[in-house]
Length: 164
Image (tube, rainbow, N blue to C red; front, side):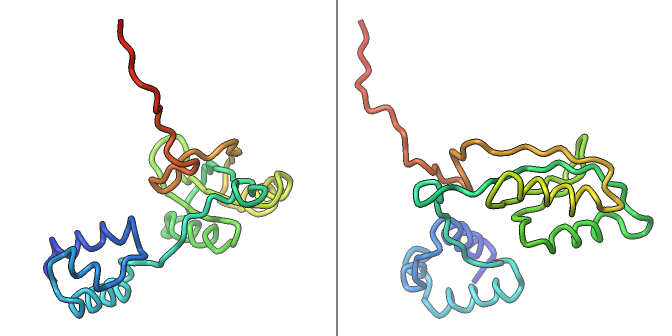
């Protein structure tokens, strides 16, 4: 499969990973074996890193607490940010970790059952790391959109436009 078609394949399965290889082959105008081989190759190369279902837990049960934590760190000589990122990523509470430019170095997304659980994780695990200079924690109040998906369904204004 050529690079352009591979990119199309990735864009399709990024938005709908439930499509079967037969459907994907029809959409791309190629044969199913080519799609299967390409997906396997992309998984092996860790371009496709996994498959996940996006669930709006707020509709099913009491939502967990999600926090966005800004970290300012001092990277150790010769190791840069990679060692710190590996340490932080190892915690199961950490959902995502980004190295950013700007006034802080990392943005960490953490999920816990309670506000106290998240606060204790920040104070005992993150803030206590030798390289961490400071933390700023933001607790999410409402999730409207995640991974490009509106969590409350499409809230379109169905009223008719009336003009004088």
